[in-house]
Image (cartoon, rainbow, N blue to C red):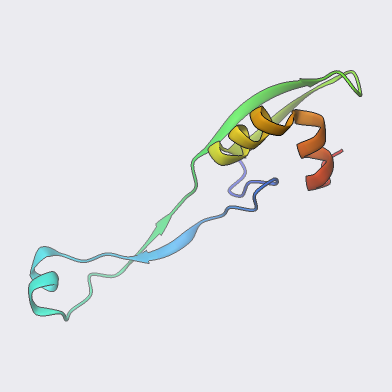
Length: 80
């Protein structure tokens, strides 16, 4: 499964983790943690080209496709 969304370019980020004791004393970090985007596998039928496409995209991209349409969004992203 892909780790980045081809439409929104969302990828993983590195965030810091803190224990409750660290919050109280403001020192001694517990380390770094990687956070991944919420990627979903969706199948879209695009009637303009007459094809079905299976995409691994973020949930924000799903909302964008629902609002603007699959063909317009995928064309703008360079996937068509």
